[in-house]
Length: 453
Ligand SMILES: Nc1ncnc2c1ncn2[C@@H]1O[C@H](COP(=O)(O)OP(=O)(O)O)[C@@H](O)[C@H]1O
Ligand SMILES: N[C@@H](CC(=O)OP(=O)(O)O)C(=O)O
Image (cartoon, rainbow, N blue to C red; front, side, top):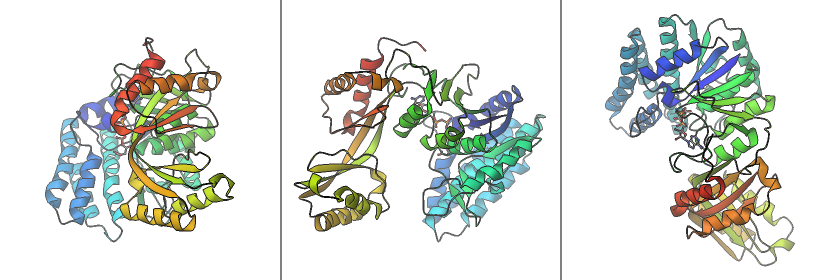
């Protein structure tokens, strides 16, 4: 049994949904299909999820609810008309959206989650109806039927019982069409995963039914060794390990959500990234292990939106518990951290900037000064992390020097270097203004002139 996930670009309009049906039809092993909300049809288009966030904000601030709701309905209506499926589904979608707009607004996050999730929920109903209209026996299955997630406000994740509950989908006679991106808490509250979280749903389903393969369909032939929107014609990756992919998707390879690897990783279920627009291309295989080739670096990613908290104190290294106390102050603000590069008397904590507010920064700074008697404490913003990843890196000397020299050729200053103990990745913190230039310079250093798949 194969679980497939089709991303927003693969279900953005009627033409794409026809391709999805053909892909599902072409292999009888494809029994479970997770779908996203309609995504971008062209580069300046707006994803349905973003239209829904806009609608939710209008509902919260007494904005143009009717106009924004109609915009969402129109996206579905166009698809329904083109696919020539029963029009009643359009009325069902309009009514569903109206009900969600009238939902309790006491908890703003849960209200927005409820509207956001309708993008995939309604698309799954629509796609199941289309499959049936062309004789492909299919059934819409709601995440209410077992995708149990944890309670608010912690980051959303599937509880262990979700896997047991969803395992029964194995026995479904029809093709299961399952909406991505959300689940329900034990008391029936809807919660979404992070943006891009339909990848996570597909992975949970694959693990639950113990699929032989999780196929993730998107709009590129494979995972490339660098973002194709920044680097011209990057090398395609044929095989990549879970941990290489985890590092790369964490730090900018938006093609696959980093949290989506966990459920399949535990069971060793292989993942392939494939193109809905070119399904015969072999795609990229994500596997527990791979044979190393002559190239030490598998991919280079870059992501912006980082801040650093800098703390210095003379004789910090002698003070037992300094690091723990510092991280506890951050924990008490419900903030997670990414890296902690340190010297003898100073330490930096790298944090995703979206978690910070001026008030939180002030509180943290004050507490570190008062409680830890630090000499110097301040935040800096506007950083990017550039990550070089490869299982072959640990057997290669001089790699960090080559990377540093490529970065310095752009005139950028390296603000931070971090190498994890597994030596599968090397992280450089730089100011964001040179991010793309640095990515291109590093690509040139490690991949040119080789440009074949
Ligand atoms: N290293 C990479 N390899 C392939 N695609 C990448 C990479 N980095 C970023 N991307 C982008 O990821 C996009 C696919 O992800 P996404 O937009 O989430 O698709 P979907 O709609 O299928 O969920 C590609 O169109 C590509 O621009
Ligand atoms: N629609 C949601 C979830 C998702 O996974 O979408 P996509 O498959 O288009 O990345 C989002 O935009 O975040």
